[in-house]
Image (cartoon, helix red, strand yellow):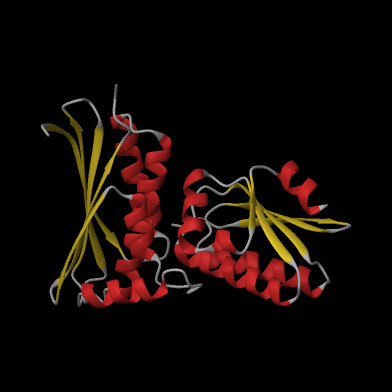
Length: 116
Length: 147
């Protein structure tokens, strides 16, 4: 059984948006991390993860997202999330991710606030 | 409170990558048949995913299987209820030690070991029994009360 995650990247003048589709587990989390680290290496310091097509996450996948946030914070940048389902939002709060990254209702709100 | 058992499902699943999705889908289908709200179903399926991952990653069982039982019922007022049992025949674990580790990581940024907290946050009732013969987690999810 596979629930492969797909990640699409939209580079913008002030940062980038990552669109995820599918299950954020260990494999999906690593896929997001690879894309995020490529962008960071390329100088991106504002990253928005739009989870509009992700309905399922697990704690291992979220732990990888926290690692990405920490690396971005080390570089002086910021990561934000938008379009979370209520249960994903709740799980982010349980694991403390919501303490280190901003969460927006939708991409328009996030883009305006982050200047993307 | 009086309740009536409506539907029951039993699964034996191999401990392979992403098998938790099969378990979550089966429980979700049962919950939808009972009329449970999508948000409550989502919470239940995320708890099941974490319980299956715990069994797969930590049980150390020789038979490489997990055994799931879902029972859907309705309370006297019509509120849907799902009972979930997930059992492995692994080495078991010390629940006291696990709870101590959880207390130590509350409010910190520990990256792993959040499964039990996620399960308890998403389900209404959780009971774990563990011994050297294996572990069973029994979880209950209720829908919103029907008015």
